Amino acid sequence: VTALTITTDHPDAKSLVATILAAQQADATVAPRSRRALTRAAGSGRLVAAYDHAGTPVGWVLSEPCTPRTTELGAMYVLPGHRDGKAFRELTTYALAMRPKSIVVTMDGRFAQWLLDEWHLTETTLWGVTRASAGVFLVRRLAPWRLRAALGHVKQATPRYLILERP
Ligand SMILES: CC(C)(COP(=O)(O)OP(=O)(O)OC[C@H]1O[C@@H](n2cnc3c(N)ncnc32)[C@H](O)[C@@H]1OP(=O)(O)O)[C@@H](O)C(=O)NCCC(=O)NCCS
Image 1 (cartoon, rainbow, N blue to C red):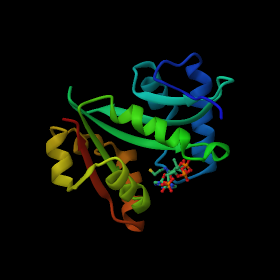
Image 2 (cartoon, rainbow, N blue to C red; image 1 turned 45 degrees about the vertical axis):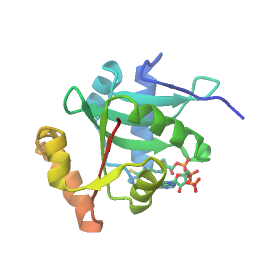
Image 3 (cartoon, rainbow, N blue to C red; image 1 turned 135 degrees about the horizontal axis):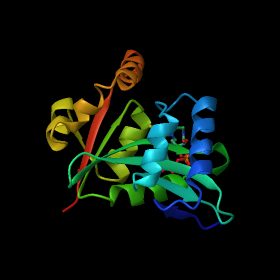
Image 4 (cartoon, rainbow, N blue to C red; image 1 turned 120 degrees about the vertical axis):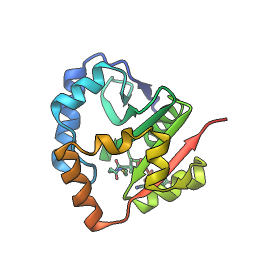
């Protein structure tokens, strides 16, 4: 069993971003982020990564704060060689603990159900996440590239709006 390190503190942010960009190119399941956006996220504690014992990144998730209490989690990804659920669970645990309130919006029904069953998120609506994020959820998607990505996704599936409020 190999221990993973989950952190927002990246010894080599440049190579982490390169790894994420390469994964995005190889696999279109996650809406792509630009090099600039990823580099900024990595430098400001918004990019959570899992590293193996050798210090190689094996998975990541973005935590994009909406308000001081609320963050939106996205772009969750685990590299194919590490899909035994361990990195996935450790990244989820870490990311959900970052703010009292977490928002997840996903088109992946299996992921949504897992967050409801195993992590006790609750299902809400577009209005629910908009209110919880003080409007930031919507404002973010007004960027043209985000709108294109969102519309492309909506044609294929129904978005699920999930929220977790820690006591
Ligand atoms: C989704 C992903 C992170 C899952 O990681 P993983 O290590 O392969 O997870 P596993 O297949 O070992 O499954 C672990 C648990 O997660 C659950 N799960 C939830 N959503 C899942 C999904 N979309 N795909 C696979 N498993 C998922 C499984 O049910 C499983 O629970 P179980 O152990 O009780 O059966 C990984 O496959 C991946 O990066 N895929 C491409 C990107 C993606 O789909 N991102 C997530 C949606 S935005």
